Length: 343
Image 1: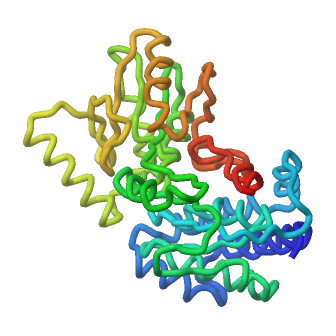
Image 2 (image 1 turned 90 degrees about the vertical axis):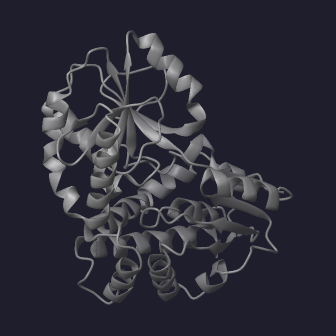
């Protein structure tokens, strides 16, 4: 299957996912959606719909063509076997890796997360309906990956150490824990904070592109921020999120730790960019230089930065963290070029 045919089929996949995203329980794939939700209660209608909609945007033919125009991709298939170890924290979180493998003309041998199996099987079923050759291009496995030419693995910091040892003989991309942060200047509007809420609450804060850490000016008043985030107060009605929120609040109160709280999110002063579900850490800064130094020092643990103002490092607008482009690579590692460069 040459590159032109792959793009045509992937674009058709995007059209199907776009329709599905608008009503995920209304067609022949509803059973796969129901199985995914029964298997992982974090996968709500809203989170699955959002993920499918974003992926369908990736797969617009004009976007695919714009993306690959910057690369020298072989017209004919390369057919190397690329192992992919998927995370399962949010719906179809590793789809971009799979897409890179297919676009580069290679085959994917995928070890799925137990938390997200059914949605990927649905994706493969749709592709096979378009072209039976996808049976040979994408294979799922439950065993350790062998007979591969390279590996892309995503997991926790602990699992990354195992990946680095086990797959050291292969060309590899191994990803660890990362989180995202927001920089507050003090000039934000209610609309700005409501947009920032999307970066915080989409997928319940489970993704690496979710904002879990704030930098705010000294003596910052959080009243307007917390008031604006009340727009997302229904998040506590989700049992898992609500339990996490209640637990974290109780622990902080019992330990007499100062916090801000609006009934659905807790703010705690802490320099760690990683925070528990239901909690956002914050740090105060006296001048912009402190912000730049912090971002530079924590570059290996920050996935992306959102801000209303421009900085010397790359930033997203509020509300855009969960809407990356095809060329916005995780950990700033160009996955497609990595695959093209394999010998």
